[in-house]
Image (cartoon, rainbow, N blue to C red; front, side, top):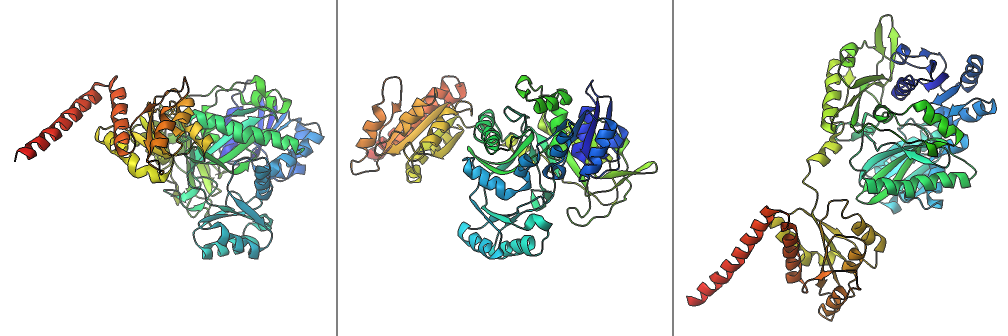
Length: 590
């Protein structure tokens, strides 16, 4: 096969590297390519947006498959043009690529198909946009509607910043025609994750989770870039969340696009914000992420040509991904000044030394050849990508390779993967879940928390309601065992069905604590908690604080059945209670 890869960045180097491994590939061309790609493919001096030139080349050379890396040619209709000439090409057509090409379209689409996303409004004039900022509150997010090379999203902290951002986009045209419209949306708390999948318009086949670092400075501070590093998998995504993203985001999107007369084939990339069990779509991209592509392809063992053909032919349901279980990390090395003005033409040294490190791939992004030397030619210059037995080993290996490479003005973040490390270094997973129906219940349920803490038992506290948030309550119980919980303590007042809801949706033991929240002094909650139907067992405690404490004691007794150290703490607790009684007796004798 003859393959043409369109693009010249780190993503395209990774694609060429992976495609080169296919037994069916004879020749790979890349337009325009870079110095690293030049070593494994024939680079063609054609720009990514020169669609007529690329078409002419593909027809002349009888290209069997074209793979499009960046978003610009996709949104400009390169797939439409190639397919009209009978050429096979991987990626969505212009009607599908609008998911990335227009943030206004995407937000309206998400709202129409009830796919979770932040509250928003779109505007063609600055005045109404600024007025909406006041109603939505601060901080908030201002987005240019069109393509802006990953830099058209501004997070603002004050009204002054918001007005400046809107003027920058719509008046000063900092992002050109991309700023003809803006989206103003609420700021979401949480942790970002990238969910990237292959699709043939019906089947969605997800790659492992990944996470990138958009901001230029460490700690995710400063202006957004195209991406300063990435890693896979992202610990924030567990199996339950992955299934929910498929069911609540990816499949509804593919089906919705088909219903809109925009059948979508290619890569579908959802940028997500994860906050506990809340999922919101931040954006869609219509191609592989960059730099996420680099670590993801290093983990993929499949023949990439076969997957691309299955997407084109509508046979993706016959493909099963083979993923290397080892984590991967990519550290981007950039030119000083990026994402602002930067100097190019700086000589790069140490590439050969870095390439010799085991399980490391040096993917070129902004490089070109100058005689026998390789020099910088862009903002993001290299993506140093490494495999490791665990995330820390992958990070250490990537930075070992980074240390071998240098050029004048070289810049890179030193904290890529820090969120993953933080999750690994946090306290052990909670063993007991303390659930309450309202924040007003916290002073009572705190007694359970305090006792567990004194015994060294890890716990988590959550507010959820059987009546006001029934889906959340059921999901909390349903995922309890997977998240490591051994016992749930549920406290609620009035007609308290919270403990019963928990017990109905989990096999984890549930202890109910009735609370005094009405004129009946908690008797209504007691009866509601204790009277469960057959097959829905709830161990019911007394009303109020004493009940909350006893719930924690019972939880400790259950856990102590398989943990001798916890049994010792129960013995110590009993001795303490006996001593308290003895102390009171002694005080009476005085």
